[in-house]
Image (cartoon, rainbow, N blue to C red):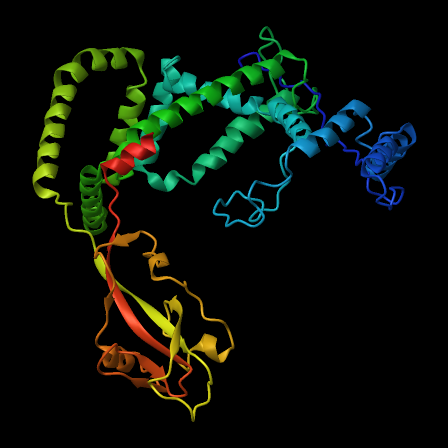
Length: 469
């Protein structure tokens, strides 16, 4: 990127137009006598020369005039691609979307290969300035020119010791890296043989502007090369960070992640108390000098060949052994799973007459449904005229999500009076003996409560192996 041409210019800023081949317009046959003939007829009309000409005139006429440079093949290809690639993200309709990138949450154009190609050409023609800046940073922090790196360290030291100068940095950068070079480009100095130079007077050169690189220029292909390399660098760093950080932070090794959480929580509390007592200026100064010093090739070679192998690696192994022993002895995670009691109500409905005057506890009732609600006379759903929800058979009752059965069978709750009083259920009569039925006063429904113990599911080794498989 050292040969970046600053005045290169060429780019296509226009979006690619699309022809809509509407085969279901007014000309389409409306009779259903022959589906195959009607489809062929509509297709022939859609791809006919007159239809394509009208569509082309409509596209070129409705646009702002910038799309005339695209060929008919591009437009036809764009239309065909629209039939293959969905316009919206999969699952946008009828599903619970949790990805915030979905088009349900953002108002952005859908995926389009022609649009993506056009945007890539525009982006690649303009991204050269970013790669120039990247290369200059690499040269600066790898000590290619030691005088420049040392000058940067001096400025960094001055700012660290005087942090109130931080607001001056963007102003100085604007002055010395934007305005001064722009002025000198309009008032270039004379040849070196002429010792006199005056910055006054009219400009003698045109103003310098940064233009996009031409699509067939060397800078365009240099940008593609740098973009290819930075994508590889990002993927490599991303995979490395995932491999290093994820195993310790996703609780796959739960004892270690718990210990890490404990240390970080303790450090957070400690820094919250003593943060104002720490010499942050000198800490930033030491960290900055150390990080930039490690960019020097000689320091890297000396550190990894002698210091790391002789001192750092043995010390890290000892610390890891001590940490593993501490985790094994002090971090206890084998607590029993949580237990809870769940309930289900067996509902039965009276057979025959539903008259209140004819009601008797000895009337015949038929089994109706097993429901999680008692369906008492003042239940909101019952007042609203809704149907009771549940399952017809006892065997179909399932534990809540994330739980599993602990006890082998359901047990009848013999304390019918207790749960009726606890829920303040009114309009019912309680059977204190026998099968503990709770009757409506009018006698339409009766119910009794069954309970069963559940425990929370434990994610064990068998589940991990299943996930890996």
